[in-house]
Length: 317
Image (cartoon, rainbow, N blue to C red):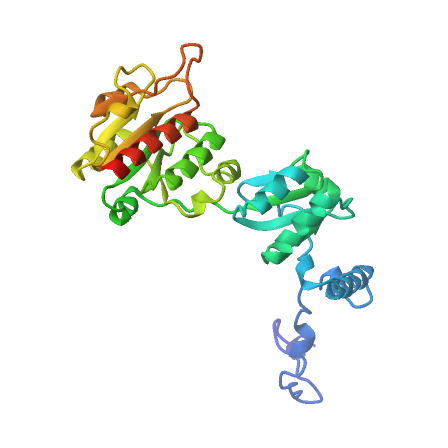
């Protein structure tokens, strides 16, 4: 009958009565199981078995073997590549971070000695696939040495620690790292307080420079300066007499009368010599007499002769 019809939206009563809740016991069924584990973390997956086998293989190797070299893990900074170059760098104790060796490399006397020196110095030794090593340096011959960045001093540190009379060697555009290393070696041999060079358009203390210095770079402070002209002015304020080396000067190095004073000896670049502004700031420009048949002296040779002349004058004085 129409009068007995239930209105729309009415709620039917449960004949069994209200139902008791679960008390949150079913909540876990609604939760996710989290991200899917990596293949190598699933015990029965092939990737996990390979990982386990690799860990066992690594555990059997001695600690000196180092960790596995992976793609994108190339040594940062400068490298020395090739069997002869690496061995020479290790013999000269060039500061290094690690020795990288290709897996299954043909071990000759040079490789064997390189490995032995690295072991004696506690240097990290790492293995990599041959293709990865050649990807870093195509001419590596299966062996690469990663070099530490050189720790430069500062002009202030050098002058503060300098003995009296001070002897500074400044380089104006020397670009050959072997010349730089040889100059550092001569500067150390003749008692210089330090070597200064510009940050730009000049050689830095690379592995080649370090080898040429024959270890002197570890004993003599070396600084990079932003502006050589400004540094010359600062040296003058400290009482330094500035002497430039130039083959065209009429004054001979043996004729200088200020060798016993605080000195800054400036060496020009291999081709152009002293820059115009540098020459103008020198208190004296001197030359080294040579045969007319020879155009000029190598920068490192000229520096050695000049420093010898200064040292001789100081000994006599």
